[in-house]
Image (cartoon, rainbow, N blue to C red):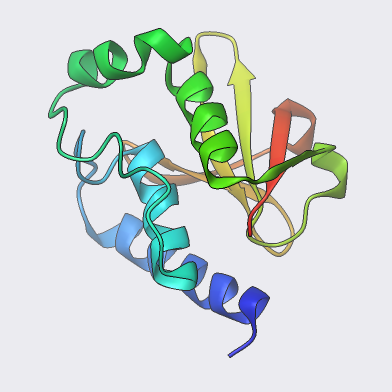
Length: 138
C-alpha cells in the first residue's frame, strides 16, 4: 500500500472510531487521536512523549503548558518528527495542522477535501481559513 493510501485508510478508520467511541483525555483526545492515525499509517508514534502522562483536560493543559498549549505541543511533535512546515493551503491528505477559533484551538488532519479534528462529540470539519500552521507528514 502506498504511503498516502495508508494515510487515507487510517483516517477513514479513525473517523469511524471517533463516531463510535467516547472522547477521553489521555486516550482518545484531539492530540492522541491524530497521532494514532500516523501510528497506524506510518508505524511510529509522534505523541509518544505525551502518552500516559494525563487523564483529564487539566492534565492535558499541564503537560502541554511548556509548549504554549495543545497547538504548541503539536508543533513540537512535528519538529521532533522532522516534518516540514508548509503553507496550510498546500496541504495534502494526511498532513497535520493547527487551528485557532476564539477560545478553541487544537490539531487537525487534512482529509481528501477538508481539515478534520477530534472533538468531544465525535469529529468536526474545520474551515481551511482557520488552519494557521501545517506540516507535511513523513
